[in-house]
Amino acid sequence: MFNDLSSPLALLATRRSGKARDMVAPGPDAATLSTILRAASRVPDHGKLAPWRFVEIVDREALADLIERHYRLERTQEPGRLELQALRDFAHQAPVLVTVISLPRPSHIPQWEQELSCGAAIAQLLLAAHAAGFVANWLTGAAAYLPGLAADLGVPGGRIAGFIFIGSPAKPLEERPRPELSEIALRFPA
Image (cartoon, rainbow, N blue to C red; front, side):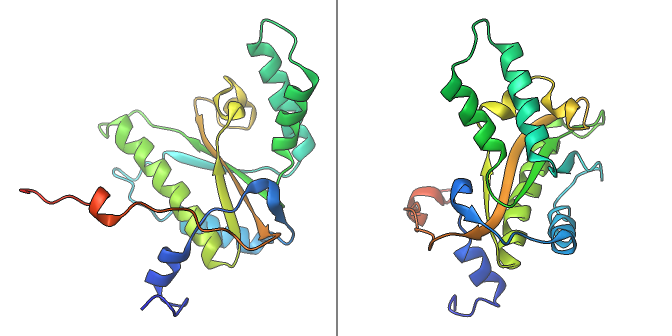
C-alpha cells in the first residue's frame, strides 16, 4: 500500500526530517512556498483564530544579527566566539527558512488548544514541504527562547514555536528508529 508515493498514506509514512545543516539548493521558490504555507494553515483551529504566524526569513544575516543581539542581552558574561558563531551559523542553514510563531488570542478557546493548533500548523508545513519534493527540519535551540526575538520578527506578543528549514537533501536521508505501535497505541479498557 505504501509503495505508491502519490498515495496520501505513503506520503505520511515516508516523511522524515533532514538535518538543516545538510540541506542544499534548491529550496521552494516563492510560489511553491506560498502553496506550502497555505496548506500549513489548513489545520484544526477551534474558534478560527489562526493563533500562529509564518515569517519567511529573507535576510539571513539580519536574522543572525538579531539572534546575536538578543543572546548578548540575556547573558551576564560576554559569550565566547565559538558560541556566537554557532548561533550565527544556525541562521544560515538551508535554502529557505520560515519561523513559526505561536500567537494565542484572547478568547474562550483555551490557550493550550491554540498552541496545539500552532504545532499542527508546523506538522502540516513539514508534510507540505515533503509533498512538494523537499526536505524540512523543525528546530528550536537557544534562539527560539530569546525574549523579544518574535517581536523583532514582526509578531509582538508571540512566542517562537520553531524554525522550519526547507531545502533539498545533500545526501540520502537516514531513517531513524520509530516506536513500535504496541508501545504508543493503547486501548481502553485494556
